[in-house]
Amino acid sequence: MTTHEVVNQVPPLVGHDTADDPALLDGLAREGAGWATAGLHALGRLAGGEAATEHGRLANEHPPVLRTHDRFGHRVDEVEFHPSWHELMRTAVGHGLHAAPWADDRPGAHVARAAGFYVWRPDAGHGCPISMTYAAVPALRHSPELAARYEPLLASTAYDFGLRPPLGKRGLLAGMSMTEKQGGSDVRANTTTARPEPDGSYRLLGHKWFTSAPMCDLFLTLAQAPGGLTCFLVPRVLPDGGRNPMRLMRLKDKLGNRSNASAEIEYEHAVAWRVGDEGRGVRTILDMVNLTRLDCVIGAAAGMRQGVTTAVHHATHRTAFGRYLADQPLMRNVLADLAVESEAATVLMTRLAGATDRSARGDAGETAFKRLALAVGKYWVCKRWPGHAAEALECLGGNGYVEESGMPRLFRESPLNSIWEGSGNVAALDVLRALTREPQVLAAYEAEVAAATGADARLDAAVRRMRDELADHTDLELRARRVVERLALVLQGALLVRHGHPAVADAFCASRLDGDHGQAYGTLPGGLDLAAIIDRATPTVG
Picture 1: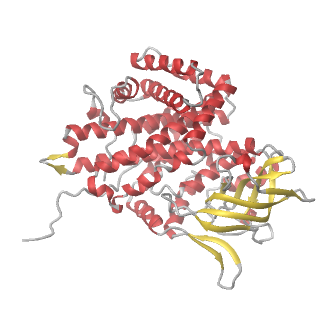
Picture 2: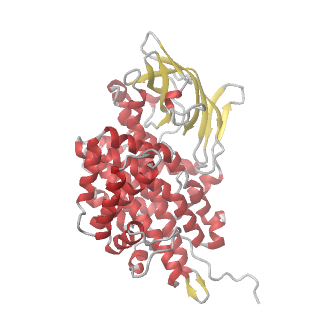
Picture 3: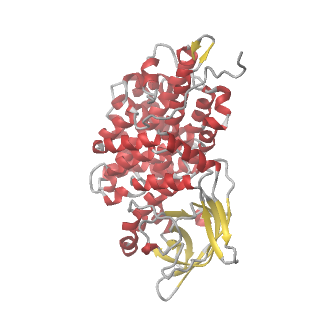
């Protein structure tokens, strides 16, 4: 008799294509990037393969280490990473996920890049420098001379790690450094100073409380110049090969995102070049912030997809009480509910990516839509991820609570996107600011929603309730989260009714818009096509 026969364990979720996602592929074609489908599947097969999964595990189990000095006592301010981190970065950069759309004139280039960023998620931590490099380019263009010098290297598909003069490298990565310990999101309270020099450069003196990915080659940062808060470009290495005095004081010990380094830094008269006009720093760097907010939505949507496919895969192979979990009514309700939330996030993400692409090409209507919808999506999709991750983890039972399942890492990652680039309150207040100062953004949003008018009575009723909420100006700031939630749900509902699978749209309207839903996942009403919904979230392995 054996004492250790392994039965009823779920096979690893490896050997699948993470791009095999109907909502994503439909959005890719709809938003003008159908030409990228083959390449996306190639990346998806890499992401779902055993090697990428193992790289993601190792990058997190061996987090970055700060080396402030070499063995001779020289200041080096370098961050060491496990080789798996570099492999993940090499793939992401090689597939253009960092900045390729800025060098690609094809319509849909930003959509293709968003889909790739969504698909390539074996480790979410390495996405931070990828995202910031993508977002840095439009901000850098406020100074055409700097953009001409550095943009081709930022868009290069060569991953060239190491501290060397930027213009001598084959490819560059860019970071962002704004927050300080006394201000946080209130960057206008920054105390770092910028002293102008005769040669047109500046010298920065001060500190930054959060500088993510401090191993990047270039950083956009904010400092107080004589003319007010201003955006600056700071290189890690100067043209002569000397280290710019940007001191890495310590790495943050974070809840999640542990494979990525986040540092506290000090500028000791660091050399910097002005980006944009003095006193216009916030407006300049907002071009970068808005694109990293898009990536927050993409990352949260990708995390939901990863969570629900893992949960469905487990339930499809695990038996309890004589039946597969996936065949048990209550588990089916949970899985379908998670899948509906995931698809609602994905359809909104692809629409935002399409608006970003068309806005970059000068479409004023899409720019207005993006202004409001991106802030709404950043608030709502990122807020929904932590609860979604917790429920997906619970679908695996005790196995989901064990690190080897990968679900604890996903759960720890889930709060980050809501905090990064403006926490929930900041995002909600940004929506109110857009509504009150830029009337064209609400008109663009209304036009998008109106395209679904008459297709579903529950959606039409939700639109009326939303308009009533917007018309009531009493305690508007106090109700900001409630207002943004309504805007988000109506927009997701309209997109699903127009473009989504009928079973998913029906379930969303019944539960999220018509109110036939409890406070937890797994409380969908009866009469829905759960099988069709779950089937769309079931990964094909092998």
